[in-house]
Amino acid sequence: MKAASQRPVVIIGGGPVGVMAGLLLARYGVRSLLLERHRDIYPLPRAVVVDDEIRRILQSVGVHEDFAALARPALGLRLLDARRRVITEFPRSMHGHHGFPETSMFDQPELERVLRSALARRPECELQGGVEVVSVTQDTDGPNDPTGPARVTFRRDGSDEEEHVWADAVLGCDGAGSLTRDSIGAVWEDLHFQESWRVIDVRTTRQVRTWEGAEQICCPNRPATFMRVGEDRYRWEFRLPEDENLDGPDGWERLRELVAPWVDLPPDASAGDDFEVVRQAQYTFRARLADRWRRGRVFLLGDAAHLTPPFVGQGLCAGLRDAYNLTWKLARVLQQGAHDGLLDTYERERKPHARHVIRVAVAVGWAMTGGQDRGAAFRRAVVGTASRIPGVTAAVSRDLSPALTAGPLVRRRPRLTGRVLAGTICPQPWVRHDGRRVRLDDVLGDSFAVVTAVPPTAQMTAVATALGAPTVHVEDLRDDGTLAGWLARGRADAVLLRPDRVVMDTVQAGTGDFTDTVAWAPLLHTARHTADARPA
Image (tube, rainbow, N blue to C red):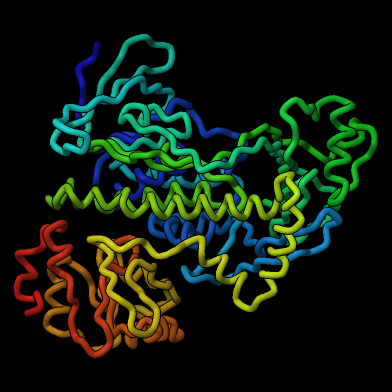
């Protein structure tokens, strides 16, 4: 048995969520070891859609331009009836709140290659493939005791010898069958959705009758989803029995029938050389949430923590949001001595958000597929009627990224007038900086930031100094008015942004100061700096 080594962080699972976690930690100088059982990227497509918030996260690790080269912006989602008549449309902007197209289609292996290429340039994270993790154990005095390190035991391909590595923190990004989830005693909470669907990925040069967005066929007998993923790449999803075979001559005829509304295929499979089925797989779409996401310094992220049906395209998005939320907090605890209670806010913030998105996906799934009960037609009629009400479709789109719940890092006060900004994410317009046109986050950096529409007060300056946060005035940014308008609608003179761009606190119009520093300062170990800034 080899002697155990020591790492600040061990990440289990080298998919997009695990690699993103490694990249984000590296951004803060935190060293990590990433263990992945496969030696190379899984070559077949799985996730195919992200939103503009995720593209902003990709920007934070410097891969947004590489991603833009392989992504295909989409116009949104259409709900169609069984005859492919439009029931309603949920449009998506080409320039969303975060400064990117609100929906982007892509091929997951291509995204993973971009992420791994970026990781290879970061010496802070070491990726080891061909490694099977067999156990995760901790020395703790209680279910959330932070003092004990965790031991990860693993074997390499072709070897029965067990190796060990000790870590100050372990991130379980190991998917739906997570060993990490079992190690912390977490169990699934069933959110009551389970359907078996066939996913078919195709490459073809044939003429495909397509809309540059996703289509959902609302039909209780044969619901389906269709989307164009790339220049010659398409995906169909059909609710089919598990024993229905699409291979061989009989299967070709069945496939030909299924895709007929979109593309014409020849009766003879041998004549379909220009229609390549890249992958077909049977999936059981489930809605589940782990009852706990943390024990001590072991955390769950991505599919290890939550499973969502794909109807609103948020599966991978939710996992990348997990990584973005947790990593800056973990870096602050490991490197700057922040209170371990800061890590409690990860599950407290992300779990309700994930539950909400899963419920939206389930609701949309039932509205779109309709089930097979007598209320199916009625539900589809309600969807069509409601969607014609002004503002409803836009509200549904916003509902995929609701404000975080109030807590130590989200100082939300009763609303008098205007929108409540705390817990929401700051918009990202193009700004002018040092004579260049750049995105806002390129100016703010990777830590806290104060964005103000008024001259900063002594207290605002003290808070910014305590956090090492730049203070930027919206007029100096010379944007298109986005930031000033956003602050005005929230009746705020200034906001304090967290590293993940969530509004932590606000200076309400005319009040002059942040009012809740005593709530978050102890978690961030900045109380000694902000004593003079506390309200009388």
